[in-house]
Image 1 (spheres, rainbow, N blue to C red):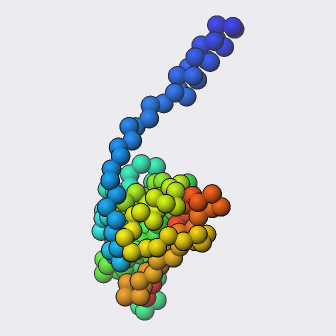
Image 2: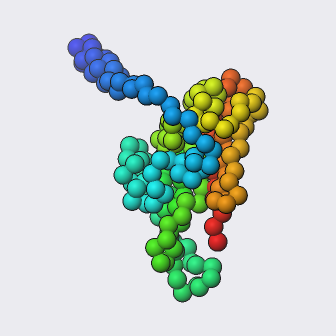
Image 3: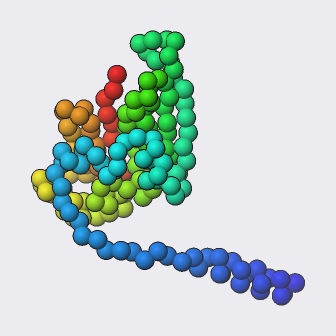
Length: 170
């Protein structure tokens, strides 16, 4: 029995010591808020590109929705989700894909320049060249032409907690 307990403890200790990936330090290339809002993930906002870009720990769910303009047509809402985050993409019956919005609360969906929840406020503001540092608990980026809004929420320690974004579509 004692031998069994020792072997189990050894196995648990080995399993707990997982290898970590070497963190590659890359230089941040500050970009304007409009460029960020145009392509926040650094890839096109299609289902195929998101499937390739987000592979680790991300699930894909589908929901069917009747088209509001033509009840005979069926559209699909794709949901890329992890434990704490969701991204929704709307696909019309004529195969047009649009990102609706979502909430990011973990590092499964990194944005351009490595903007993810958990990063410090100073590093966040260094990612943009036309965004002034402020001490508010949330920062909002909005583009009227794209009809897209991103809200970045920080905690009291200056750490990015969550990102909520939405796009208008009809």
